[in-house]
Length: 308
DNA sequence: AACAAGAGCAACCGCGTATGC
DNA sequence: TGCATACGCGGTTGCTCTTGT
Image (cartoon, rainbow, N blue to C red; front, side, top):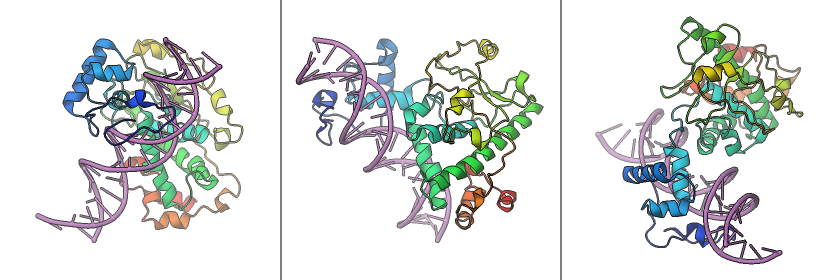
């Protein structure tokens, strides 16, 4: 990258990628820059980022423009807190694919790989740190699988139950969240997340059924069961939202949220004797167990501790 | 009220891959 | 086929905001 800061020494990323000599801007984008980029893309479309940057009169690299557009300016980018459903999805998909952020992001409409990556690094890794174990360790993965994810499911279901009283209410959704609970599914045991329906970049309906067990989670060795659990997309709901249903034929494709979780989470025999450092959990100022102020992190209560 | 530490997030960097000539 | 260019991904950095002292 031939930017202000330094040179490009990448063999493949040659100077053409970055070589826009002169006074390239770096750092935070200004409102004016954003405006120019949005206007230019609205007129000319995306792609050819270097020429786009020049055409828009931006003193930025094409790379920078692309990143700004994809991560911030795109109209379908969702801002705000990661919802419970999204947390669950991230945990599940990460256990399946690891740090394949963009792949994970494909299943969280409106979320960017950068956002998911940041979420993982700040929230999930924080918990691992509090547990004094590596985020990639079996110990922590099991903790996620047997404690965190079921807890998320419980909370999602609780939210769904709460909304059954007022079906129009959203589920754990920030103000900008377009998700809503379909009336027809409330009270059926399924929590159905309606499509986001943003710019046609939609993934259809996602469902949380009440049949999750750690054993059929993708974190288990034969994790292909995860993909096999994908339920068909509801055309009815698609019609309801008047948006085309994504008919992705990619074998890796998973409808967002289509992970089945059980409300009856029973730990495998001896699991809790495998060295989970619950003392450390309690010791870390109860942040891990009791949450740290952020309700999205508040997974545990005293009953859980005693249960454990 | 002032300062320090930590958390969260936007942006940058380097590299691998895809595409076009 | 080889090279140049463009794109996209994952890792990292550094700025800003929040919280604690």
